[in-house]
Length: 364
Image (cartoon, rainbow, N blue to C red; front, side, top):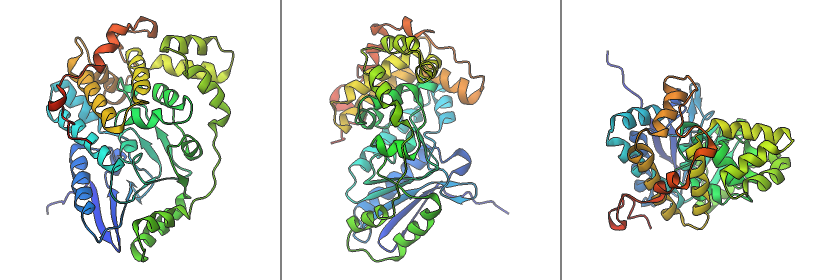
């Protein structure tokens, strides 16, 4: 008896809505190259289908739908491919960023049900949504500095547009926020109670709607109020993360006589010192960029992270320590925040391609 392998991306049209379920629950729906390609194919097909007025996307957990949205990219694949120089690594990032761009510019309402874990690549396939729906179970983060990477998938673009200096704080620390803070920081549009998701999802496929906008409005009409927890820290976030350099930020946090300052400084000390400097520059550059230019910049940066840094890839080492060997003892180079020089940071922002030959040259 042969066992059939279930598709990792389930898609169907019911009524006037195209439904997508990420179906890789054991990996918290982490995106593989195959999933990126399936998502792109489905969205391109539905974009020109007059019967589809809107698209809804959700994740799944081991018990069934919802519960986890998407934990990011498949970092074990990234480690293996990055260690071996596998060209599929390049394809993964090029195609993932093109998918992110399509979602931000999609011609129909794309509604993301961001229940449970929404991190990294999961943010990439939800931040461009016309409606970003969170629940009381949402755990949202861009934790890339913990693995020697940077908040990619358009992270420079959407984090830099958070209020005040929230973008710098989230990008550098990788801290996790819940539904209330996601809404307050403009990374979500509203909260739907987790136990009401299934009913709303099913109604989208059975009710008749006049337009895509009406479908979006129907979901938004089910939102409930939820309070933000980090509001009290906003003043501190803006005070410290507006400083001119990572060195100044860490020095000020370590001199602060507050629990928040000490905790935040301790978090930063665990991250890749080099990538903290790179990420601060990324967020501040992206603030004045459109999405396509930001994604091109991030594609340049990822090439540098995996292939162009002499000696060692911080990213391969960071993933090894966190997810492969799990010793949680990455050997960062350089070791200390204070030892990073501008000359180490600058190459990340030099494109290895002429503009006309860039892998994302076609993004508008």
